Length: 111
Image 1: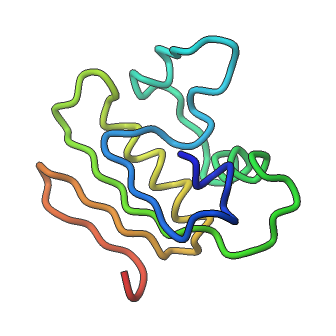
Image 2: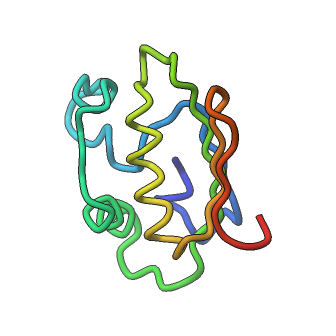
Image 3: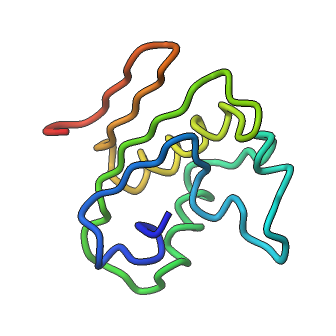
C-alpha cells in the first residue's frame, strides 16, 4: 500500500484482500510465497518492512482498515493475519479490521 511508502501523504488507507507492505518485495512482479500466505514473519519484522519504505519518518502512521475473506484463493487469508501483525505494531493497537466470513474485528479507539 502507498500508506507504507508515503505516510506523510495519507491520513488513512484500506486494503481489500491485500498483503502486508513489503510482502511482494523483490525482483519479480509476482511472489507465490507471499500470495499463498506462506511468508510468515514476526510483527517486528513486518514493521521493519514499512519503516524501510520511508527511512527516518517520525510522524504519525496512517490509520488502516483491512478486509479479507477466507475463501480467497489468489491472496490467501494468512495475508490478513500477517497484515494485522504489521498494523497492530505500527499503530500501537489502533487498527480497524474486518472479515466478511467470520464477522468483524475491531482494535483500538475511535476507529
